Image (cartoon, rainbow, N blue to C red; front, side, top):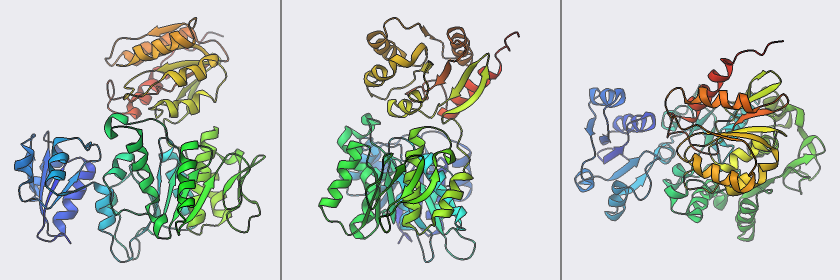
Length: 466
């Protein structure tokens, strides 16, 4: 497929480097381009792969190129992507390449996408698959590159739990996991996609296999997802359609009856999967994530008992509604992964009295609706980041008497100032919640580093005198 073909790989981070290495091993003529030199570019060059540092003219880069493999972060309006499309050159990213490279005995794919909850759901799914005795891993937008996990044979993976972002799905055309779940849809990455319809359209690519007999899983409690799932039903696709809901599920779906997660996908009777007490982290959104994971596991033949054991043994990922400490009767919670308003709402509605730590890069998304919704729960707010003024304006509209502290600094000491301000606002019984509703890259290299900085500052707080 690739022997003798000329492939340009744009981006030399982990996924790009893995793509370049895999393609070179298949006999392709590989060129890698990246804006800056790195250890990866040095390693690739040492392996005999052509590396270009900088941002040369797209026309020159694409001369003679048959395929362009882009980092998922490359938007469709990037000059290189536009030039490739104009020249009729195929453009795709690492998951699509991994799908094309599957050989005999390659693992099956069960995929998850949505605005929020992807990583929690795929790691829950991997825990269920492992409990069923299957060799598995949670990969895709997390973990090792997918191109490194496609080999079959003894000792290889049998089933992959694959997290796919809207970026990755946009840059796919043949990728069709045998089961795909769409968790939710809310405004996010609209600047990248050029509008909500394009964003939602990319997400629905996770259901591609439903048109050829695969399984599509969707959230019945999300009006946008439900409408899209009903569209598949109306189109009479040959695949299996499974809805999940926090209410009593209709036949063919999974849901909740009192405090029990149940399966009605088989004979229509309600079969117990787990109890609400089995779900970690806490919160209704994580019950929904567990149901989505269970639906995909059921589609792959996993038993009810393995699903229950997978959830009971599940270890939550960090920075997702995680309690850091309780100091002087105040609970401090890190939900730094809440990088948009939809994600932040899930944790903000889990507590009654909140000092909200918010702000960062809003990515063109409106924060007004979230602020209006959670204003009655707030006892104070501390704002940081490049778009903190937008959050402050929303708070002024919906909680005009709320004490708000604006932290303007952006250096390494900013989070310590944020935590100190929150400590002054909080009273015993309050929860100080880092749920920024915004991305972190204006101040931190990742949401994880933002969460770590918050936890470090919390742990450095003085212990109140007895």
